[in-house]
Length: 264
Image 1 (spheres, one colour):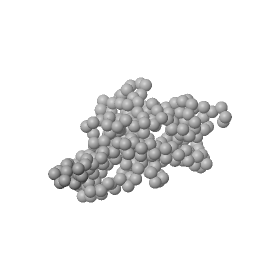
Image 2 (cartoon, helix red, strand yellow; image 1 turned 45 degrees about the vertical axis):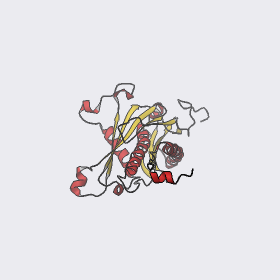
Image 3 (cartoon, one colour; image 1 turned 90 degrees about the vertical axis):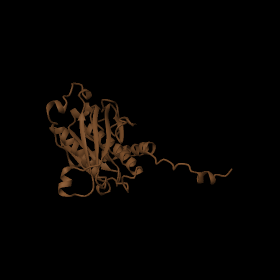
Image 4 (cartoon, helix red, strand yellow; image 1 turned 120 degrees about the vertical axis):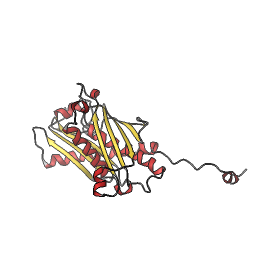
């Protein structure tokens, strides 16, 4: 379809501008603001020295990772009611929370964070499509920073991360496979697919459906190829961010013996 254009004039295989702003929530152990175009999510990770009751009752060893997700009232064009006002989270919120938690647990050895729970809070400031995939991508970075601080403080003996994790959406919009759908595309897409993958190229989760439409095996393969290309780009940007923002172990304090080794 030669005259095909996306609402923001991106190429079919082009991500929205992706950026990370670190230390957005100073009281958390690790935090950042992730932006996929106009979709912006605060991701904050906090370590707690306790595990869920079910782990204690069942005497399950290791630690746990859990996530909470919310869309702030002003994140959408029409005000969204808070879950606390409604009295309970809606089904979509619960589904996304579980997805974020599963994604992080897939790349962490929970036996290496014994007695601890890593809480990851994802709060959507602005929603323009792809909030769950942005939350997963940012949650991984916040968790890495929090765990690195714990390693420096010798709370853990080994780094529990086995792999990295990132996510992106793909879909069929106006009969064309496209990467990283914004809200206009997502709301009008014939097919919508969210893909979560590890840095080693393994799938964690696929969430796909036809919106009053169906899709073929060949179309699915095309969407997965698009997603893998996008996730590779996201993983590179994640690594660049971590190289600049992972906390570093402070140098040992100077002592008299240190001065004695400095040539004059």
